[in-house]
Image (tube, rainbow, N blue to C red; front, side, top):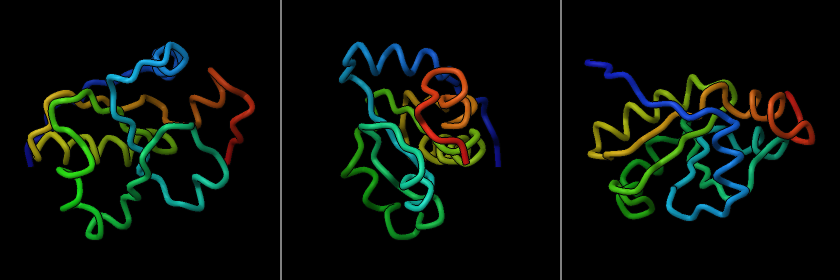
Length: 115
């Protein structure tokens, strides 16, 4: 498989865009529901990577491939996999949230629990 480099966005950039009310982006969280129960950021659509088969064909319905799409997970590994897949599905502007929600908790919002 040809892995092209995926663009990244820092958690600081993410926080700035969330606080500005930027509605021009799609937010996807690929963590498990039990992870989201512990720590989450408002406004993300949950598509657990482990349930890929259940939602894969819904993606063109739920998401616009031509809108900037930011993908979140715990540390940035699963979200990078999701970004790769979205690119193969024709998504034109995909960014991995570097460091995931763990980095968000450390660098942006300590009220988001670590796990």
